[in-house]
Length: 358
Image 1 (cartoon, one colour):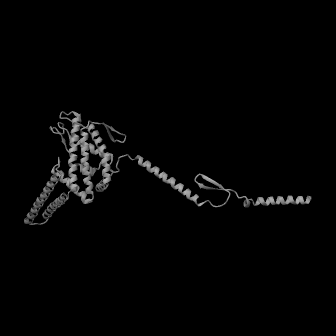
Image 2: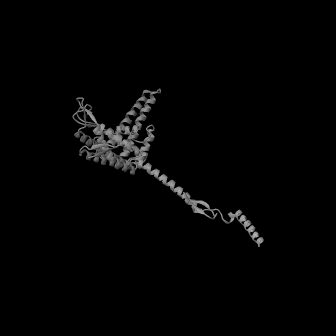
Image 3: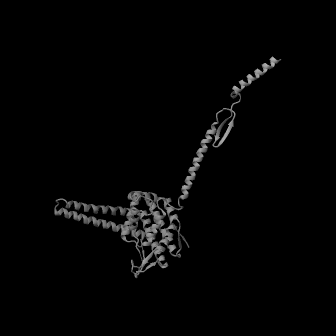
């Protein structure tokens, strides 16, 4: 009996030792695996993680990146002022307003001692200022041709034109008021005097009339095939005058007979006469179609050439130029309406933007 009991004990100890040595075969250690970021699952089997767990991890990472990008985009948009354009900035509108106010010369001042106030605005001067120096325009002023191309490609689009008119007309009106309030004129006596209410109304009325006239001319020039034909002929005749002068100069550098020089001189005179005839026909046509007010002949011819060049660059742009002319007329109406209102209190915000309140 004792022998049997001893044998059982020995077999039990041996079995326990064998079971201990082979425990992993019968009782595997639980494995931990990641099924999603920051989430872990404990499994008692050694099977591989399901495929959708890896997909879920990738999707979560992608969503997190997309959300970060979206937040960054929203933050960037939040920093962009409402109602501003990437190229035509608020500073441009404010500069235009200040420039226009500076063209107003009240009567009885040192710069205009006459009894009649003047508004010395010339479209050529405006074009040179904003087509050469580009104040308030986000372009490279060192690259004049490239800057002009960039401006026209951007601005001469229907949605951009509509946006600029809707967003910038109130700013333009308030910037005019701000510039008027900041302006002083030297009287004949040498004393500095601010703009009076009567002078403010006069300046705005004169500006309105000028914008009205320019808008009408631009609208007509952009839509008239007859005017464009006459502009093209006038430019050809101008080139012939230049060529005639060049031919005469070349003859002078050679051993040329007096008769040949006389013929070359006669060709110059003929070319000039033809150019003036073309110019007069063009001018008469413009006046008949647009009935311009307050614009001299040189301005009308200059403006006709400017519109013609826009069409030569891109025929489709003529419609956009015509739209600008129509919106100038509407802006003139807004300026005229403002002239009949009392001077508002102008407030300049932290960004340098003028806002008016009645």
